[in-house]
Image 1 (cartoon, one colour):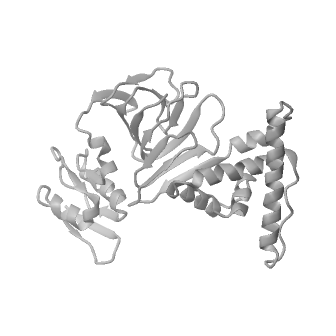
Image 2 (cartoon, one colour):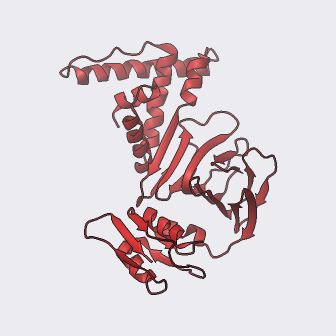
Image 3 (tube, helix red, strand yellow):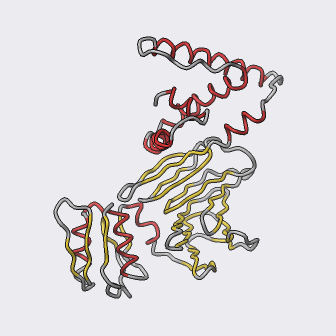
Length: 315
């Protein structure tokens, strides 16, 4: 990753497209966080103890200017570290507050999935059409992230700093555990499945909470959270590249397929009943295989022009 781009990002001057580029780099490159943290350390040292280098002019001298700038920034960071260890660090509180408040956003498009590690060592796996927002540096008493979509969390244990997953509906508080969260505001869908450990869930604006144990699943319906036991692991089948076919309606099932395969599916009418439908379909076998398999148990027809990403369903 270009260090000039990271410097602009830390300074709050990166464009939305550049911020998206950095987010994808962090999600796709397993070594990205190490470079990210090293560059941020240098940047912080410069903010606290040095003047930022002047804007570059001319392409011919670009490489030389970057090299000299980096040396200056690194020297400033070393001075900052020495003063800190000696107990003589005078912190510019506003600058530090701005840096720790810097947010990183990682998104997956329909048909995509991603896996990466947060700065605290927690491993996050994002399902398709999901957005995760988290601070570049965890500071304070809590580690807070925000999720829209579906993700699996393997949280690094830190009893002094609880991990908080915020959604449109509620907050999930953990110390160290494995669980999945599905939070889709447009459809008012919110579920949490606990694989290992213990978590507490509270509705936004409420002081009451639900404690979950392994195999518990908590869902939101009509503004109320309810807890049941689910031991068939269907909530986690997407981690194995599978689509769970159990849905409340045909439209909801088509929406799930649309996100999993990255295609647009339009349903004309209400659609057939899917009561009692269960099982999984492997994503890698393609949307045509999925629809043909469904036609053996659910009555509907569809049209899909070769090369098109739009499918029309006619019940």
